[in-house]
Amino acid sequence: MTVSVHLVTWNNRTFIPTLRRSLEAQTRKPDRIIVVDNASTDGTLELLDTWPGIDVLRHTRNLGFARAHNQAIRLSKADAVVVLNPDVLLEPTCLEVLTQALDTTPQVASVCPKLLRFSLTADDLREPVYSDTIDAAGMLLRRSRQVLNRGEGSSDRGQFDQARDVFGAPGVLALYRRTVLDDVAVNGEYFDEDFFAYKEDVDLAWRCQLAGWRCRYVPAARAYHYRTLSHHRDRLAALVETRGRRSRMLRVLSYRNHLLMLLKNETVGTFLPHGFSITLYELQKLGYALLREWSTLTALPSLFRLLPRMLQKRRLIQRRRRRSTRELRRIIES
Image 1 (cartoon, rainbow, N blue to C red):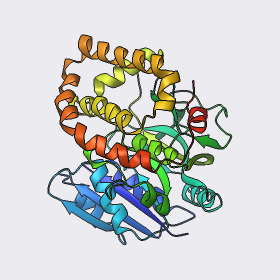
Image 2: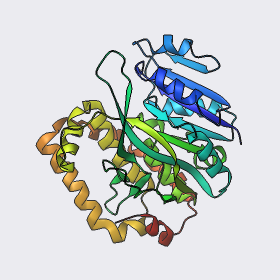
Image 3: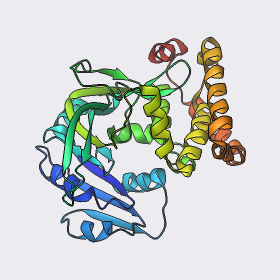
């Protein structure tokens, strides 16, 4: 199985040297590394120029996560592709373990590792500081249609050391089977380019599940994702702090893309038993926006403008559905 690693960069100069070292230390070397740069201005391109053997595509404007990764996937001829954030560090056996897991389970569309968190020292060296805090042990979809990273924010005590199927793979680091990406692509798009950025990984995971494909969480593969440490022990307070650090654009995209994702992928058979939970969750989000984040509601005009295109995509997605309502209900967790 051939594997290509894909990065989308946008002013990620801080992380390029450590990411490069972690990729060069892999026991299973990628067959190709493709980097799509979305008009970085911080010296990212200059650092990429010193990295031999990689392919760099340079854009003069920010195309967004989805379109840039789609471009890299189309360029790749590999059997499997790694979607990788620049702010990730891989343990040396990570790619080897993920590739072996995908290669030996043909029903699986994607695999993902145990993701822990790291920060950077405050000095000029900006060295990584590793933690035992879990960033993600795969994604799960709840009855309310809230999507969560399993174990996020908890200390790693071995409670997520068992391999299992999960709803999907976080786009921070995921290995996808190429034939599955081709199977679930809509209008030639693997990630939905109308999303621009944020929650496109969830949308892709949902389409894979509808089409009958599985996602496997493989804890023997480990990597670290950069996160600014929260000052709060209370999880709700930490969540509010995290939202406060997000840009206005990110909050708007998150809210809009969540609704677009529901419109495209929700089925009548799964909505009916969970309708109360879904409605309650959406009302809570709307209430929070009205009270604290008025700017988030600027997503609505864009949502309505995209509505006809989303309905067309929905018809294509639902026409390809292979998984029964009973199976879909089992995948959704409380």
